[in-house]
Each structure stands twice: as structure tokens, then as C-alpha cells.
Amino acid sequence: MTSSQPEQSATGVLSTPFSDLMHARYSVRHFTDEPVTEEQLTAVLEVAQRTPSWSNTQTWQVHVLTGEVLTEVGNRLRTEVTKRTPEKITGPDLALPKRFNDLELQRRRVTGYGRYASLSIDRDDHVARFEAALDNYDFFGAPVGLVITSNREVGPYGWVDTGSYIASLQYAAWEFGLGACALGSIGMHADLIHRYLGLDDQVDVVAGMALGHPDHAAPGNSYRTERAPLSEVVTQVERLHD
Image (cartoon, rainbow, N blue to C red; front, side, top):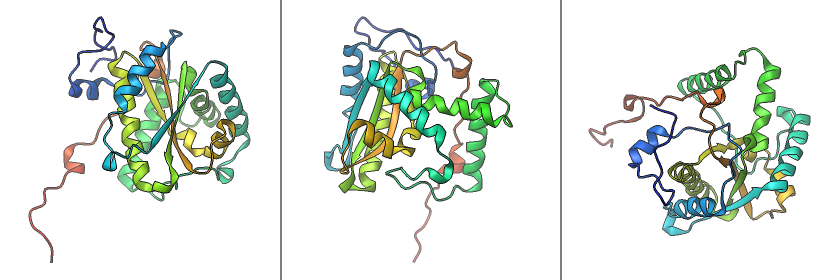
């Protein structure tokens, strides 16, 4: 697997099979200074808008942050989140995960350790790990930050469709020569996002997303997550139960 993206056509679109996109894409946390053009952003959003949803309801909304607004949101989030302890995180719109089983917890640990190792941060260096985590709230220095919300009245099925949209956004970004990282951390502090963006109570903040040109050479972009073998996730149904 290579971290570099295929050559772009004259239109800026990558002629890449979807299976190749699935294998090549990774969560980008370091970006170059190259700006994202309005045409690129529009193209990504238009492709992602083709995401399938329940009866084509398309319950998601996207809030685009750039320039001074993005910088100010990042500064405010860093300041507020630094003051908060886990006991004070009462702001998510979505219910937090109740419990991960042992296998899921192991996958989380491997991912976390690999991420910090790529940054040369010791797993026991909690201060450095916290500082690295704060980069989520700067949208990892990307030139574009997105906040993705869902219609609250729809409930969990709206969250499911919005999750599909978030995945589509990441692959669409890659197709147009960009990189992205979904930010669940933004949803963890939805109360602050509601306040900063003036969002009403009719929407749920699901996640954020950093979007820009990947710096493939950055050490923090070197880590790749693995996927579980099909034997762990696929079950062939041989018979029905009474």
C-alpha cells in the first residue's frame, strides 16, 4: 500500500477504482499549506451528496469553516476543552458508546498506540498524548473544517445515514486529490459547537471533519490501521431458529 495518491486527470478527478480508493485512503492529520479551491470543495460535496439514505431523506447538513472563522473556532475549542475533565463532558448530542467488548477494546488500543508511536510519543506520556489530542480541535491545521449535523427529530436512523455521508465525504475528498479526517471529538463537545455556530436544538452535531491537501511525508501520516479478517465479522447463516 502506498501513501501517495494516483495522478489526477486534467479535470482534477482521479480515475481510480473504488476498491483502490478503499485501500489507499487513510485519515489525514497533517496537511500542506496549499489551499482548497472553491471548485474542489464544491466537487467533493456534490459527489458526497449522492450518498444513499432512508427513502432519500438526506437528513444531514454541512457547515463549512474556513479562514478566520475556522481559526477562531479552533482557538475557542482548545481553550474550553483544556478546562474540561471527562466528568464534565456532558455536551454530546449523541449517546456515548456504552461498552466495547474485549476485541473492540484491543483494536482501539492498537490504533491509539500506533498513532502515538508515529508521533514519537510514549504511551505513558499522558501530557504529550493530551496535547496531541487537542490538535483535533484545530481540525489538524487543515484549511477547511466541516461540521456535520443531522435532523434531531429523525433520531438514530438519521445518525446512520449521516455516518454514511461522512464516509462518502472522505472517499470523495481522496478522489479529488485531497485528504480528510473525521473528527468524533467535535461531536463530543456539541454544546460548544451549538453555541459557536448558533445551531438550534433541532439538529444533532454528529462529527467534524478536517479537509485539505495531505502532507504524506509527515511522520504523523505514516501510521496505517488494519482491518479485521472476514472471519471475525462475517457469519454464514445455515439455518433458522424456531
